[in-house]
Every structure is written in structure tokens, then in C-alpha cells.
Length: 361
Image 1 (cartoon, rainbow, N blue to C red):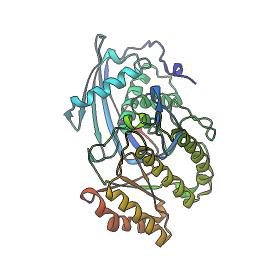
Image 2 (image 1 turned 30 degrees about the horizontal axis):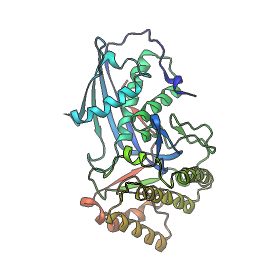
Image 3 (image 1 turned 180 degrees about the vertical axis):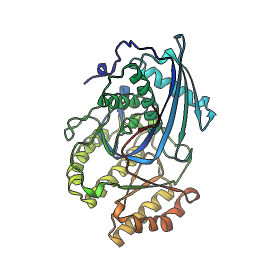
Image 4 (image 1 turned 180 degrees about the horizontal axis):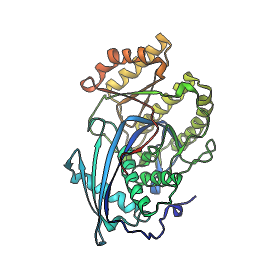
């Protein structure tokens, strides 16, 4: 399949105005995507858990107008106009215009809000861009009511990727693979696909408690971070490692081996940060409290035998992952031992979800 597959046909219907609303979750990668080629194509495959509670809710109001040379839209966050968000949406619209040819035929009002605290340090680009892509696909479906659900989801993921790479993994759940690889042969560089193999009950309703270690602005943007992989001395070996870890996860997910699962996801998290520390320029994205938390997790796991593990995004916050069957004791540990290392003691309890949902028709 190529990009040509997502170029829209000539529409025969005429749509004048309306509003569509979608909620779309964030996701957390188990095997990390780090490094990209032109047009948001990943250098290596990734697999992620789709989250449930941490999501963006976006309403797209559209009104037909005379087509112009420019895009016509306004962006609101929590009811407040956000002109500083608009350049990113402008860039997104330019990237997807060839696939969504009606963009200049409408005036858009984009109203968005997050269920997690604004400026919490949780990446909202995945949930935000996927929610907006879904709204645009709902409008396209009005032009083309015969569109299948499979195509709708594929194209929504394809469009979301052009806004934020990881956003392509937020359309569906609960495990999503993005990037061509030999383990999941149906996977694509162009969009995310549902993980197709058996998954043990141990991984159903898996828990993710997000420790808000540092809620400040990122030290380095994801785009800059990904670009640092060009010419990185360890890049090629890292890309190979991601393929190897994805292959290893297949048997782990099927067998329910929680110890092996933890070993892979923690190694992936630390490798991501190692790549940043060994790039040029170099960055240390963890904070002292991040390291304190990781050591506390390792000590608690050794002491109790409970299956508590962690993963990290490109920042200081810690995603504490564990099976729901062990949640009572692990949550007590998080509340008493880990929360003091969080900024203002804040953490968010989430779990694995099944993807985005339309909130109106």
C-alpha cells in the first residue's frame, strides 16, 4: 500500500456545515520509535499500549465558504483562543491537503481539551492530532458514506501520523504496531495496525500510573530529538535492537511472562534515554527524582516479587506499569513511596484502553 491509496475521490455530495466530536487517547510505547525519515516515516517499528483515561476531546465545527488560497481556522483550548497553537495546525493541514482536498472549502473552529492537566508533562500531541484527524475523517465520511470502517481507521491513522508520528497509534487499541517489520507482517510505515497475535490474560487491563516528576516544558522537542538520530554513532544498532525486541515481545505477550516483559520494556526505556545522552548535542532528560523512582521500583520488586516495571517517554516522567491483579499493593507503594518524588505529589492512574470514540454523529 502507498500514499496514493489515501487520496480522496471526487465528491458528489455537498456538505454545508456541522460539528463532529471525537475523544482520542494518548499511548505509551513499549518498543520505542526514535528516529524518523522524511514525511514522518519511522526508522524502526514500535508497539504501544493505548491508554484509557488520558485523552483529548476535540470538536470540529465546519462551515462551507468560498475556497481561498489559505486555510481558515481558529483553535481553542478549554474555551480560550490559542493563536500560538495555530502554526502547528497550519503545518499539519499543509501536509495532509493532498489527501483531504476539502480543507480550504471550509472555515473551521477547533475546540479541544485534555482530561489530564495542561502542562503536566504528558505528551498531548498523540491524543490531540489523532482526535483532529478523526474529526476530519468524520467530515470526509459525510462526503463518502460508503467508506468502510477499516479504511476510515487506516486513513485516520495515516493523517494523524503526519501531525505527530506516535499519534498514528492512538486510533485503536489495545496494542498497536507501527512500522514495517518481519514479526507483524501486516504492519505499515504509513499507519498503525492492531496487534494480530494472541495476548495472555496477564496483559488485559494492564495498569499505567504516570508519575508527574517534572511538569515543565520539554528540554528538547520530539522533532529535534528524532533528528539527532541522523548520523548518531549507535543509530543503526538501535534500529536493529527495536526489531529484535518486537520479535521477543511476541512470545512474551502470548506466554504471559511478566518478568521477561518488564526486562524488555525497561531496557527500551533506558535505551531511548541513552540515545539522547550520546547524541550531539546531548541531553539528559531524566531528573534526579526520576532516578530515585527507578531505584525505588527495582528495590520494591526485588523485595516483594511483585511485577512492577516502568517505561519512560522522552522526558522525566515515569510510567509505572503493572498487572491489575497486583494493583492493590503496588498502588499503596506508589502512594506512600513514589508520590513524594512527584511534582506537588501528583500522579495519574490510567489503564489500557481500546482506542478513540466518536461522541456525536
